[in-house]
Length: 222
Image (cartoon, rainbow, N blue to C red):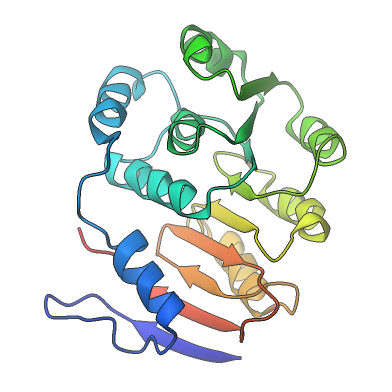
């Protein structure tokens, strides 16, 4: 496996990324600074619900919005639900979004918003049971978000066989413990994964088997 290191500098033009597709993704999705059409609504949601729902900083919510908008998946599954599931539903209104959480508090906070996102389904209970049920009741995963959950390893293991060339896995908190970081590093080296992006706090995995396997470490602009 060939590793390429990319660290942000003010004059950086994406050096180290030779693939035009990867260069576009880095510059115009990961590092994009132009305002998207829904950023104002996203900001309002973040200000209103950040205190009662698990959520990322606003900049990371915007990144999730751009990622979903770029991939344009037909089906999204989030395990460890929070504000981010609403962000992804907003980014791709045609996607079926399944949001799985173990706490009823999440349901109470999100229920008033659900009528605005009719393509979204919220499931509360045992995360692994609900996730495995969701895997086998619909088509392939377009986008998997492994969010605020202790079951990250089990979720990814169960989801890997369902990944297609068009799938994207987004994994939260890859450096929150030594054990999780070691697991993430092993996942990047695995033959079952394709192009991987280590963004520091988030990990991205693509599965296009026609592409040469690469691993990018990217420090995003603040």
